[in-house]
Length: 306
Image 1 (tube, rainbow, N blue to C red):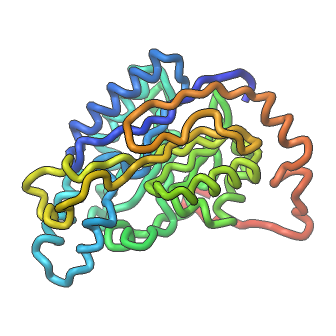
Image 2: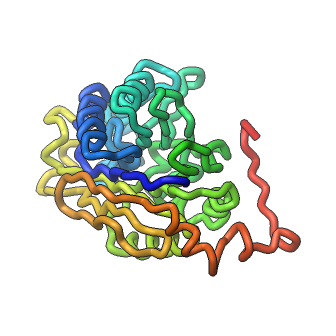
């Protein structure tokens, strides 16, 4: 990072399981953040077309359950092909707003469409796809939804606003995955998530202090009432209200909060990032620099694009 920048962490509910209308909402909020001065706009894990909450996704374990099959087919139908028309629309949202845009999606590979992935996509203001990372290990009920990712996207990408990299939710508990980002000089660390527990905030503070980077963590916000009436697993949502309460936050490289955490409502968190703060905090500790011993310890990342 060479200059101060404004960043936006967006906590907003998708139009649940409706890809095109959710992208409409994303484009609106991205434009709103850009008008507020944001150079980087970040949306939560699996925002398009909606994070598959454990409240209903656990039912996918039902062997031969026609409701579960239909729910999974719905999610697959509304997923984002990369490359494909929906990805092009996301690129256009970045281009039209003049921002860097990072968003979590459920991805389907048009070459092998039988498996879905939990994916982080990052687009430049010119609309190029510069960051493409698939979650390495889906967590708990997620293993009924997504396949495991690969080693691509485990390096921060150099951009005019700083080196941007990210991991998805509980990937952030994988020490070597984190270190892969540290080794590539990450300055803006994105930790998109669906974890709305209080304990997640302690994780964010630790990552900020360990990475000595700015941390942006957009978390999903969902209400049971927002699911379509004809959603096949609607019965699993009966009697429930908020099923994803958020907890989005932006932290500095010392672990202090710059914005958030935000719970129980929609909102756009804004914070100004000062590059001098990186030097100030890394003087005492740089996990991949003077506080590393590459002569003793080493990490190998096996990535398709390596």
